[in-house]
Length: 490
Ligand code: AMP
Ligand code: MG
Image 1 (cartoon, rainbow, N blue to C red):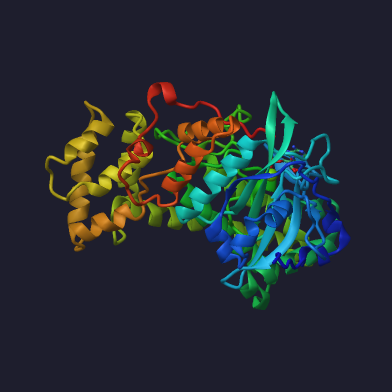
Image 2 (spheres, helix red, strand yellow):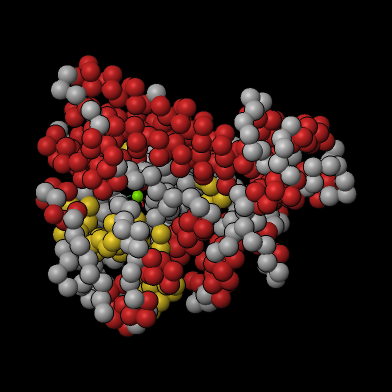
């Protein structure tokens, strides 16, 4: 057994990538391996977890016949354009077709230097690798489009960061690794032919229905905009903060990609920032929808040369596509908030009801996840259960007024209370990868103990199912447990 890779991206012109050679790990061992995902990809799990599998996932052996590459891309980092980024610590082994017939990239991250490494060592430390493994899989289980993690392996070699840390490699699975920054790369070089080739590749791989549109590249831009708007709306509903929404970290396929100093918000506050490198709060929770729009305007600009031969018309097409973003975001966001509030039909006042609630949550510093989980269990009629909510919101506040308004709104619907509660419990997670839990898992793992990380992953695998023995994982951090900063650790 082995994995049969196809290499469609490597068949694109040579400007798209540089060939790469993963650094062989001296003494690899598994940290984590994903049986469900292996099955979805049609990869024999027994083989994958064997020494031969480990050797492949740690760069020790090259897959036969595969062309391993590092992709070229550019990007705006914190608003500043960098014409040459690219996979500096990642190597694309190739693609496999999954059980849904969808082509998936299999990439090693942390596997050593490439042509795009600049000053970096191309390596990754155990902390960031495990964080990406845990959080990306948790996102998937929450039903949010994301790249996934097939395996994390220790290399048996230390990497030098602020201190020496155990080195690790993540095997990342993605619909593709094409980014907004990939388009910027060719636009900045005025390489219009490659821009077209890239757009055609993306249409064929991700947006086949655009192929028959009267303006296929305009249709592509609209499709990407819609998917991103929906993705970011989904982030907002679970309190996810990406942390580094640079244009090179925005996937064209609409998956969450490049988990660095990402985090889930505990206490509701739109200004929440965890990333230690985001001093200005550019990528704060509440800024994400606006940043998404900004990134997509960069994509639109990069597509201008192929949107129309006439430059003015091209601008019109781009503008018309960008105009979709606010309404696409708003409709996904409102759909999400209705579900979180247990509302089955649309009402014009729902957004105001939501915003009023968010004001209470931020004023009272209420845990976002726990609040909605608890709200899901509150009967339509006032009663003893209300105390669970009051305990979360704290007193004295005007929150009681909001509760009255919510109940009045529930009474305008015909759905039974039991049905409403079941629906809410299916969208308001009990378990999210809370910072203090993730940090604890990483800390233990750095010391060679995976027990806590394994337990955390077990909890996060079923985020909507409350289970006995996992009570601690439901709770917001105690004051002494609160994590202020997360690091990307690159
Ligand atoms: P990221 O912050 O992960 O989006 O990375 C930004 C850019 O820096 C990308 O081009 C990465 O490939 C590159 N990079 C990050 N860490 C390293 C590293 N350890 N060695 C080489 N390149 C890196
Ligand atoms: Mg990146």
